[in-house]
Length: 356
Image (cartoon, rainbow, N blue to C red; front, top):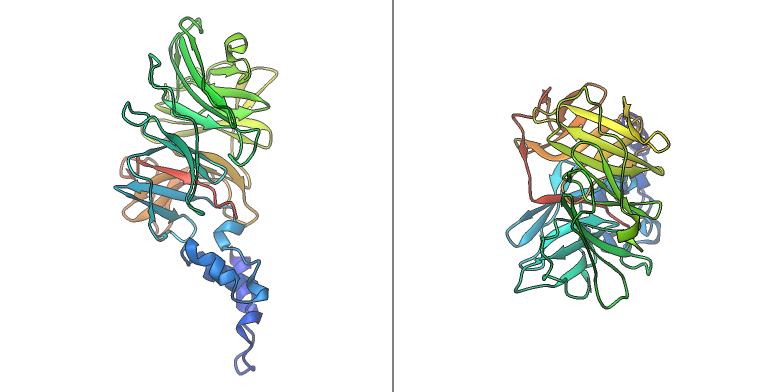
Protein backbone atom coordinates (compact mmCIF):
# COMPACT_ATOMS: atom_id res chain seq x y z
CA UNK A 1 0.00 0.00 0.00
CA UNK A 2 2.88 2.38 0.82
CA UNK A 3 4.30 1.88 -2.67
CA UNK A 4 1.01 3.00 -4.23
CA UNK A 5 0.87 6.11 -2.01
CA UNK A 6 4.48 6.99 -2.89
CA UNK A 7 3.64 6.73 -6.58
CA UNK A 8 0.66 9.05 -6.12
CA UNK A 9 2.78 11.63 -4.27
CA UNK A 10 5.41 11.66 -7.02
CA UNK A 11 2.74 12.20 -9.65
CA UNK A 12 1.74 15.56 -8.15
CA UNK A 13 4.80 17.32 -9.54
CA UNK A 14 6.97 20.01 -7.95
CA UNK A 15 5.73 23.14 -6.23
CA UNK A 16 5.67 26.11 -8.59
CA UNK A 17 5.18 24.12 -11.76
CA UNK A 18 2.49 25.26 -14.18
CA UNK A 19 -0.84 23.69 -13.29
CA UNK A 20 -2.19 20.97 -15.58
CA UNK A 21 -5.77 20.55 -16.80
CA UNK A 22 -8.05 18.17 -14.91
CA UNK A 23 -7.88 15.73 -17.81
CA UNK A 24 -4.22 15.10 -16.95
CA UNK A 25 -4.97 14.18 -13.36
CA UNK A 26 -3.01 11.00 -12.56
CA UNK A 27 -5.18 7.90 -12.79
CA UNK A 28 -4.27 6.94 -9.24
CA UNK A 29 -5.75 10.20 -7.92
CA UNK A 30 -8.81 9.94 -10.17
CA UNK A 31 -9.37 6.38 -8.94
CA UNK A 32 -9.29 7.50 -5.31
CA UNK A 33 -11.75 10.34 -6.07
CA UNK A 34 -14.21 7.90 -7.67
CA UNK A 35 -13.93 5.67 -4.60
CA UNK A 36 -15.58 8.38 -2.49
CA UNK A 37 -18.41 9.12 -4.95
CA UNK A 38 -21.84 7.45 -4.70
CA UNK A 39 -22.24 4.71 -7.31
CA UNK A 40 -24.89 6.67 -9.17
CA UNK A 41 -22.25 9.35 -9.87
CA UNK A 42 -19.57 7.01 -11.24
CA UNK A 43 -20.93 7.14 -14.79
CA UNK A 44 -21.12 10.95 -14.67
CA UNK A 45 -17.49 11.13 -13.53
CA UNK A 46 -16.32 8.87 -16.37
CA UNK A 47 -18.27 10.97 -18.90
CA UNK A 48 -16.51 14.20 -17.84
CA UNK A 49 -13.59 13.78 -20.23
CA UNK A 50 -12.04 11.16 -22.47
CA UNK A 51 -9.09 10.41 -20.18
CA UNK A 52 -11.47 9.60 -17.28
CA UNK A 53 -13.76 7.33 -19.32
CA UNK A 54 -12.08 4.13 -18.13
CA UNK A 55 -11.26 5.19 -14.55
CA UNK A 56 -12.54 2.78 -11.91
CA UNK A 57 -12.74 3.18 -8.16
CA UNK A 58 -9.74 2.05 -6.11
CA UNK A 59 -11.74 -0.65 -4.30
CA UNK A 60 -12.97 -1.95 -7.68
CA UNK A 61 -9.36 -2.26 -8.87
CA UNK A 62 -8.64 -4.02 -5.61
CA UNK A 63 -11.69 -6.21 -6.30
CA UNK A 64 -13.13 -5.49 -2.92
CA UNK A 65 -16.87 -6.15 -2.57
CA UNK A 66 -19.21 -4.01 -0.53
CA UNK A 67 -20.97 -5.12 2.62
CA UNK A 68 -24.66 -4.52 2.01
CA UNK A 69 -26.38 -3.88 5.35
CA UNK A 70 -30.18 -4.19 5.44
CA UNK A 71 -32.11 -1.79 7.63
CA UNK A 72 -35.83 -1.03 7.32
CA UNK A 73 -36.52 -0.03 3.70
CA UNK A 74 -32.95 0.69 2.60
CA UNK A 75 -29.60 -0.94 1.91
CA UNK A 76 -26.51 0.69 3.35
CA UNK A 77 -23.40 -0.27 1.33
CA UNK A 78 -20.24 -0.29 3.46
CA UNK A 79 -16.86 0.08 1.76
CA UNK A 80 -14.23 -1.95 3.68
CA UNK A 81 -11.33 -0.17 1.95
CA UNK A 82 -12.42 3.33 2.98
CA UNK A 83 -14.20 2.09 6.13
CA UNK A 84 -17.15 4.31 5.17
CA UNK A 85 -20.79 3.99 4.14
CA UNK A 86 -21.92 4.70 0.58
CA UNK A 87 -25.19 6.47 -0.27
CA UNK A 88 -28.17 4.35 0.94
CA UNK A 89 -30.11 2.43 -1.72
CA UNK A 90 -33.87 1.91 -1.70
CA UNK A 91 -34.66 -1.80 -1.49
CA UNK A 92 -37.64 -3.64 -2.97
CA UNK A 93 -40.42 -3.79 -0.33
CA UNK A 94 -41.21 -6.79 1.91
CA UNK A 95 -38.41 -8.96 0.53
CA UNK A 96 -35.26 -10.52 1.89
CA UNK A 97 -31.97 -11.45 0.26
CA UNK A 98 -31.68 -15.19 -0.33
CA UNK A 99 -28.24 -15.22 -2.00
CA UNK A 100 -25.68 -12.82 -3.43
CA UNK A 101 -23.19 -13.42 -6.25
CA UNK A 102 -22.03 -12.08 -9.62
CA UNK A 103 -23.18 -8.58 -8.63
CA UNK A 104 -26.81 -9.74 -8.27
CA UNK A 105 -29.14 -10.43 -5.36
CA UNK A 106 -31.65 -13.28 -5.38
CA UNK A 107 -34.66 -11.97 -3.46
CA UNK A 108 -38.09 -13.04 -2.28
CA UNK A 109 -40.39 -13.32 0.72
CA UNK A 110 -41.33 -17.02 0.25
CA UNK A 111 -44.52 -16.38 2.22
CA UNK A 112 -48.02 -17.60 1.38
CA UNK A 113 -49.23 -14.16 0.41
CA UNK A 114 -46.27 -13.44 -1.89
CA UNK A 115 -44.55 -16.31 -3.76
CA UNK A 116 -42.56 -13.92 -5.96
CA UNK A 117 -38.83 -14.49 -6.36
CA UNK A 118 -36.52 -12.40 -8.52
CA UNK A 119 -33.02 -11.17 -9.24
CA UNK A 120 -32.15 -7.58 -8.39
CA UNK A 121 -29.10 -5.52 -9.35
CA UNK A 122 -28.55 -2.64 -6.91
CA UNK A 123 -26.09 -0.90 -9.25
CA UNK A 124 -28.40 -0.71 -12.27
CA UNK A 125 -31.77 -1.09 -10.48
CA UNK A 126 -32.54 -3.94 -12.89
CA UNK A 127 -35.02 -6.61 -11.86
CA UNK A 128 -35.43 -10.07 -13.44
CA UNK A 129 -38.56 -11.92 -12.29
CA UNK A 130 -38.69 -15.70 -11.98
CA UNK A 131 -41.78 -17.94 -11.94
CA UNK A 132 -43.56 -17.91 -8.58
CA UNK A 133 -41.78 -20.06 -6.03
CA UNK A 134 -43.65 -23.26 -5.04
CA UNK A 135 -44.83 -22.84 -1.46
CA UNK A 136 -46.72 -26.12 -1.12
CA UNK A 137 -43.67 -28.20 -0.22
CA UNK A 138 -43.58 -29.80 3.23
CA UNK A 139 -40.33 -28.29 4.52
CA UNK A 140 -39.40 -24.60 4.10
CA UNK A 141 -36.33 -24.15 1.90
CA UNK A 142 -33.52 -22.53 3.89
CA UNK A 143 -30.53 -22.14 1.54
CA UNK A 144 -30.35 -20.80 -2.01
CA UNK A 145 -27.77 -20.42 -4.74
CA UNK A 146 -27.42 -19.75 -8.46
CA UNK A 147 -24.72 -21.05 -10.78
CA UNK A 148 -23.85 -17.98 -12.88
CA UNK A 149 -24.98 -14.46 -13.70
CA UNK A 150 -28.73 -14.34 -14.37
CA UNK A 151 -27.94 -12.71 -17.70
CA UNK A 152 -26.51 -16.09 -18.78
CA UNK A 153 -28.80 -18.70 -20.34
CA UNK A 154 -26.90 -21.41 -18.43
CA UNK A 155 -27.92 -20.05 -15.01
CA UNK A 156 -29.43 -22.54 -12.55
CA UNK A 157 -31.35 -21.32 -9.50
CA UNK A 158 -31.53 -23.73 -6.60
CA UNK A 159 -32.99 -23.96 -3.13
CA UNK A 160 -32.14 -26.80 -0.77
CA UNK A 161 -32.81 -27.98 2.76
CA UNK A 162 -31.29 -31.09 4.29
CA UNK A 163 -32.73 -31.95 7.68
CA UNK A 164 -31.59 -35.14 9.33
CA UNK A 165 -31.92 -37.78 6.62
CA UNK A 166 -34.46 -36.00 4.42
CA UNK A 167 -33.50 -33.87 1.42
CA UNK A 168 -35.66 -31.20 -0.23
CA UNK A 169 -34.48 -29.53 -3.43
CA UNK A 170 -36.22 -26.93 -5.60
CA UNK A 171 -34.47 -25.89 -8.80
CA UNK A 172 -34.99 -24.26 -12.16
CA UNK A 173 -32.92 -23.31 -15.18
CA UNK A 174 -33.49 -19.76 -16.38
CA UNK A 175 -35.99 -19.73 -19.21
CA UNK A 176 -38.06 -22.59 -17.82
CA UNK A 177 -41.63 -21.90 -16.73
CA UNK A 178 -41.84 -24.19 -13.71
CA UNK A 179 -39.72 -25.24 -10.75
CA UNK A 180 -38.61 -28.84 -10.33
CA UNK A 181 -39.27 -30.24 -6.84
CA UNK A 182 -37.29 -33.18 -5.49
CA UNK A 183 -38.12 -34.66 -2.08
CA UNK A 184 -36.19 -37.62 -0.63
CA UNK A 185 -37.44 -38.74 2.79
CA UNK A 186 -34.51 -41.08 3.39
CA UNK A 187 -32.00 -39.52 1.00
CA UNK A 188 -29.10 -39.68 3.46
CA UNK A 189 -28.11 -42.56 5.74
CA UNK A 190 -26.62 -40.43 8.53
CA UNK A 191 -28.01 -37.17 9.86
CA UNK A 192 -26.71 -34.16 7.95
CA UNK A 193 -26.68 -30.76 9.70
CA UNK A 194 -26.35 -27.99 7.10
CA UNK A 195 -23.94 -25.20 7.89
CA UNK A 196 -24.69 -21.49 7.57
CA UNK A 197 -23.19 -21.23 4.08
CA UNK A 198 -25.17 -21.46 0.86
CA UNK A 199 -24.71 -24.30 -1.62
CA UNK A 200 -21.89 -23.88 -4.16
CA UNK A 201 -21.84 -24.87 -7.82
CA UNK A 202 -18.47 -26.45 -8.56
CA UNK A 203 -17.45 -28.39 -11.68
CA UNK A 204 -21.06 -28.80 -12.72
CA UNK A 205 -22.09 -30.21 -9.34
CA UNK A 206 -23.85 -28.68 -6.35
CA UNK A 207 -22.02 -28.91 -3.00
CA UNK A 208 -23.67 -28.46 0.42
CA UNK A 209 -21.53 -28.32 3.57
CA UNK A 210 -22.55 -29.54 7.00
CA UNK A 211 -21.17 -28.19 10.29
CA UNK A 212 -18.83 -31.17 10.72
CA UNK A 213 -17.22 -30.92 7.28
CA UNK A 214 -19.16 -33.53 5.29
CA UNK A 215 -20.46 -32.64 1.83
CA UNK A 216 -23.74 -33.49 0.13
CA UNK A 217 -23.14 -33.46 -3.63
CA UNK A 218 -25.55 -33.84 -6.53
CA UNK A 219 -25.94 -33.06 -10.21
CA UNK A 220 -28.56 -30.29 -10.64
CA UNK A 221 -29.72 -32.02 -13.84
CA UNK A 222 -30.59 -35.19 -11.91
CA UNK A 223 -30.35 -34.66 -8.14
CA UNK A 224 -32.40 -37.68 -7.06
CA UNK A 225 -30.15 -40.34 -8.62
CA UNK A 226 -26.81 -38.55 -8.12
CA UNK A 227 -27.02 -37.42 -4.46
CA UNK A 228 -24.15 -38.74 -2.33
CA UNK A 229 -22.30 -37.86 0.86
CA UNK A 230 -18.66 -37.05 0.28
CA UNK A 231 -15.62 -36.39 2.41
CA UNK A 232 -14.61 -36.83 6.02
CA UNK A 233 -15.34 -34.45 8.90
CA UNK A 234 -12.97 -31.69 9.89
CA UNK A 235 -10.15 -32.72 12.21
CA UNK A 236 -11.52 -34.83 15.08
CA UNK A 237 -9.05 -33.14 17.42
CA UNK A 238 -10.93 -29.88 17.16
CA UNK A 239 -13.99 -28.92 19.16
CA UNK A 240 -17.35 -28.80 17.43
CA UNK A 241 -17.58 -25.61 15.41
CA UNK A 242 -20.52 -23.25 15.67
CA UNK A 243 -20.27 -22.00 12.09
CA UNK A 244 -18.77 -23.24 8.84
CA UNK A 245 -18.47 -21.52 5.46
CA UNK A 246 -17.33 -22.69 2.02
CA UNK A 247 -15.99 -20.90 -1.07
CA UNK A 248 -14.43 -21.87 -4.39
CA UNK A 249 -10.89 -20.65 -5.13
CA UNK A 250 -8.96 -21.34 -8.34
CA UNK A 251 -10.91 -24.52 -9.01
CA UNK A 252 -10.63 -25.80 -5.43
CA UNK A 253 -13.02 -25.80 -2.49
CA UNK A 254 -12.02 -24.05 0.73
CA UNK A 255 -13.87 -24.08 4.02
CA UNK A 256 -13.62 -21.87 7.10
CA UNK A 257 -14.72 -22.89 10.57
CA UNK A 258 -15.31 -20.41 13.38
CA UNK A 259 -15.66 -21.38 17.01
CA UNK A 260 -17.85 -19.52 19.48
CA UNK A 261 -14.90 -17.58 20.88
CA UNK A 262 -13.62 -16.73 17.39
CA UNK A 263 -10.93 -19.32 16.70
CA UNK A 264 -10.56 -19.75 12.95
CA UNK A 265 -9.37 -22.71 10.91
CA UNK A 266 -9.10 -22.87 7.11
CA UNK A 267 -9.18 -26.07 5.06
CA UNK A 268 -8.75 -27.11 1.44
CA UNK A 269 -10.58 -30.13 0.08
CA UNK A 270 -8.27 -32.90 -1.14
CA UNK A 271 -10.56 -34.42 -3.77
CA UNK A 272 -8.80 -37.77 -4.20
CA UNK A 273 -8.40 -38.42 -0.45
CA UNK A 274 -11.87 -37.00 0.25
CA UNK A 275 -10.66 -35.09 3.29
CA UNK A 276 -10.08 -31.51 4.39
CA UNK A 277 -6.44 -30.42 4.59
CA UNK A 278 -5.53 -27.65 7.03
CA UNK A 279 -4.19 -24.42 5.47
CA UNK A 280 -1.81 -22.12 7.35
CA UNK A 281 -2.52 -18.98 5.32
CA UNK A 282 -4.23 -17.48 2.28
CA UNK A 283 -1.11 -15.77 0.82
CA UNK A 284 -2.38 -12.95 -1.43
CA UNK A 285 -6.06 -13.81 -1.07
CA UNK A 286 -8.81 -12.19 0.99
CA UNK A 287 -11.91 -13.98 2.24
CA UNK A 288 -15.27 -12.24 2.62
CA UNK A 289 -17.76 -14.21 4.70
CA UNK A 290 -21.46 -13.63 5.36
CA UNK A 291 -24.59 -15.73 5.71
CA UNK A 292 -25.97 -15.28 2.18
CA UNK A 293 -22.88 -14.42 0.17
CA UNK A 294 -19.22 -15.41 0.62
CA UNK A 295 -16.24 -15.58 -1.70
CA UNK A 296 -12.51 -15.16 -2.03
CA UNK A 297 -10.49 -12.65 -4.09
CA UNK A 298 -6.82 -12.21 -4.94
CA UNK A 299 -5.25 -8.82 -4.27
CA UNK A 300 -2.23 -7.38 -6.03
CA UNK A 301 -1.63 -4.83 -3.27
CA UNK A 302 1.10 -5.66 -0.80
CA UNK A 303 0.03 -6.20 2.79
CA UNK A 304 -3.70 -6.54 2.04
CA UNK A 305 -3.88 -10.32 1.61
CA UNK A 306 -4.12 -13.15 4.13
CA UNK A 307 -7.17 -11.59 5.80
CA UNK A 308 -10.79 -12.54 6.45
CA UNK A 309 -13.53 -9.91 6.52
CA UNK A 310 -16.82 -10.44 8.35
CA UNK A 311 -19.95 -8.34 8.87
CA UNK A 312 -18.49 -7.49 12.29
CA UNK A 313 -17.70 -4.12 13.82
CA UNK A 314 -15.84 -2.66 16.76
CA UNK A 315 -17.67 0.61 17.46
CA UNK A 316 -18.08 2.11 13.94
CA UNK A 317 -15.08 0.35 12.40
CA UNK A 318 -15.20 -2.87 10.41
CA UNK A 319 -13.16 -5.75 11.77
CA UNK A 320 -11.06 -8.30 9.90
CA UNK A 321 -9.10 -11.34 11.03
CA UNK A 322 -5.40 -11.46 10.14
CA UNK A 323 -3.90 -14.88 9.56
CA UNK A 324 -0.47 -13.28 10.04
CA UNK A 325 -1.12 -12.09 13.59
CA UNK A 326 -3.91 -14.57 14.49
CA UNK A 327 -5.89 -11.60 15.84
CA UNK A 328 -8.93 -9.49 14.99
CA UNK A 329 -8.14 -5.92 13.92
CA UNK A 330 -10.34 -2.94 13.12
CA UNK A 331 -9.93 -0.95 9.92
CA UNK A 332 -10.01 2.51 11.44
CA UNK A 333 -7.96 2.41 14.64
CA UNK A 334 -5.49 0.36 16.68
CA UNK A 335 -8.02 -2.10 18.09
CA UNK A 336 -7.05 -5.77 18.19
CA UNK A 337 -8.32 -8.83 20.00
CA UNK A 338 -7.65 -12.56 20.13
CA UNK A 339 -11.37 -13.32 20.30
CA UNK A 340 -14.58 -11.75 19.03
CA UNK A 341 -16.56 -11.41 22.25
CA UNK A 342 -16.42 -7.60 22.17
CA UNK A 343 -17.51 -7.33 18.53
CA UNK A 344 -20.96 -6.53 17.19
CA UNK A 345 -22.31 -8.32 14.14
CA UNK A 346 -24.61 -7.16 11.38
CA UNK A 347 -26.82 -10.23 11.02
CA UNK A 348 -28.88 -8.78 8.16
CA UNK A 349 -26.17 -8.16 5.60
CA UNK A 350 -24.27 -9.71 2.72
CA UNK A 351 -21.23 -9.05 0.59
CA UNK A 352 -21.90 -8.04 -2.98
CA UNK A 353 -19.43 -7.78 -5.85
CA UNK A 354 -19.02 -4.55 -7.78
CA UNK A 355 -19.24 -5.90 -11.35
CA UNK A 356 -17.95 -2.86 -13.27
